[in-house]
Amino acid sequence: MKIGFEETPAAPAGTYSRHLAKLLAEYAPEHEYIVDGARYKELDLYHGFRPGLPLPLLRRIPSVMTVDNLNFLRYPHLYSLPERLVLLRLYRRALRSASRLITVNRDAREELSERLRIDPGRIEVVMPLAARVPHEPPAGAQLEAVRRKYMLPAEFILMLGTVEERHNHKVLFEAVGSLGERERAIRAEGLGAAQREAVAADPELPGLAAGRARGWGAATAAGRGGIATGMRGETPADAAVPPAASSAERVGIVVCGRRTVYADSLLEYARGRHMASRVDFIYELSPDDLPALFRLAHAFVYLPDAGIEASIVPVVEAMRAGVPMVLSDTQLNREAAGDAAAYVRPEAAGEVAAALENVLSDVNFRREMKARERRRAELFSEYAVARRLIDIYSSL
Figure (cartoon, rainbow, N blue to C red):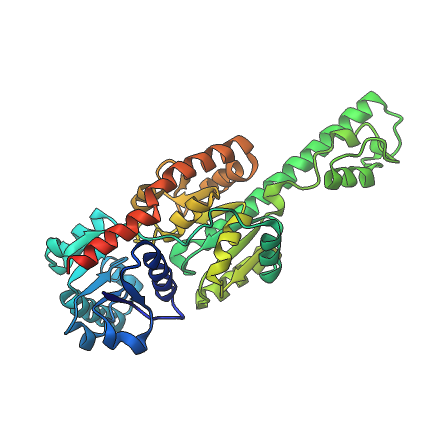
């Protein structure tokens, strides 16, 4: 059987199509998988991921359509009237034409059936595939090559997915900014206490009585190098000075997704908060670089509004890569990640900051989260998804 997939090279659906075709070719090589619009006339079956299905083709062969969300019905205020009318027309036509429909969970299946009056017997539930994670983690040279290619910071939080307001990037910016402010305040308070203790022990200690840290150069070196003992100019106060910077203060943010008008406004927002130097954008990511990007990240943050039906593919990808996660507390995210993530209200910057503090700084917490992710990721095996899809294709 020749099975065709939607060809949209510039869109996420196109990347997913190629990934799916490659995977199915490994698990079910008895079929041929085609992601080439010029060869659609050869197809025995077509699988699409958007409502714009090629109707002339579908009149002669069976078809499958994956429906990832119905946000235009749930949240009409987010769309203009012309957009809603066009989407409704496209969806109705595609859903009636497709032989089988696929959703990612049972709730979506029920909603699709009720709201658009689709026979539930035509709707299947199949978990989405995540990007392939190599059995062996990327080597150090490969990681460094990806870091240089995208000019990534040494430590960063990754946000991957649609770059739009409903994904609350600004909440993350605010949370990360507040972490840095808090740590600077703690460090300043610790320095002041150390100075006061030193003066109380030896009032004749020069410089400190006047409120000046004579050993500041040594203290700064200690923060960067970790050891200051025996350095010239060290005072009793220096040993008590906290490190110059902690992970939460120097961590950057990498936003990865298609460029939008909102993405440009995010950069202006970062400038307004004096943190533009800590924010990087990747608009064109090679799929081959995704495993290394996850491996380089210190944390993955995914904050879609609780009301929208956002894709869980980024969550599954992060979980399989073993990067600690902070997620919106939504039903979809909990279905995907279970107990392998920290959950927050996506609009609450304080909750996001508290979760990040654990994820970035607590070694035991990170270790436990990674162990849970490994166990949870087994539910999303490539073989199970491939077998389920082949069963659906073969039934048509």
